[in-house]
Length: 334
Image 1: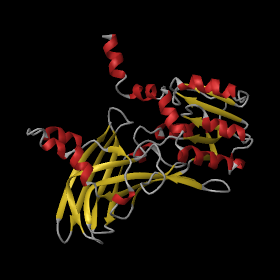
Image 2: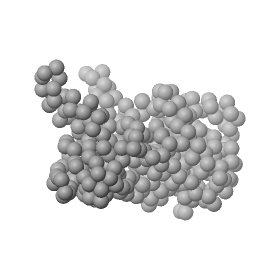
Image 3: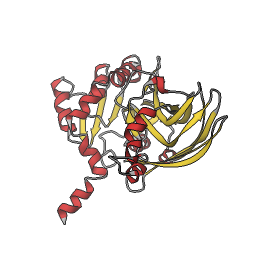
Image 4: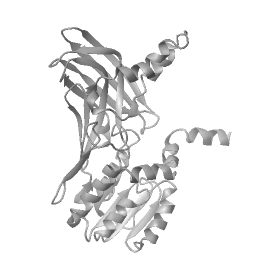
């Protein structure tokens, strides 16, 4: 029975931390040039934010962001990670001669105590797929409210979640319509489930056939846990005559504090990152003419049993020259 209980636990929240013990994940993130170089730029170009300051690095992984901060003169850096990678971060800090500046703490942010009452800066790469999936935003908010000094700096401090429509007939046919006829047999019951699972993949920018809709702003210094549940309206205007098979979400990340702001995007039109894009397939294609609009709402809330998972509802409506369509889809990011 004890073994069964342990197995159940590892299928939800605890698996998140266990998965970040594996080196492959950290290799992928470190090799994400867009992600890592823009954090480095935000720290180095604005070293007045860091120099002589006390910094908290949440979800430090290998400790790369802590090393960036130490190099520009941070007074002290407290690097926290809950997974086994923290043990290697300690070795990496020592290997690079920063053990007098960086203190690595293994544990959950919500359960540990820092050796200081307040910090000047919080740096964290907390974003997940679709910005909020498996993200550490709740944890960052907790740390901010507990330890950040009034007027303290958060890196990054401003993010946006955005939506576009795409033509994607080929992939939809290969991956979803495939279940309609499998060697002469109908397996539509699987298709009905498969379409509710958003796809995380690289989208070709040539597939985009609408303008961009800003769905959600995240102003990290003032964002609340309650703000992670939201409903956002959208209005996508077709940029050409085409068919919409899916809606695609991506996010932009901005470091606006300090002397020189910088940002990176996970848009299909930008250099690709390990976050890729999140694709929500619609049950039927929508025929749309240039200038016509697809309107609707996207609702997002953390799953009741595991807040790192998401329940997403998309409603849509189109009243065009060749087609009128409306519907509602329930998606689950697990």
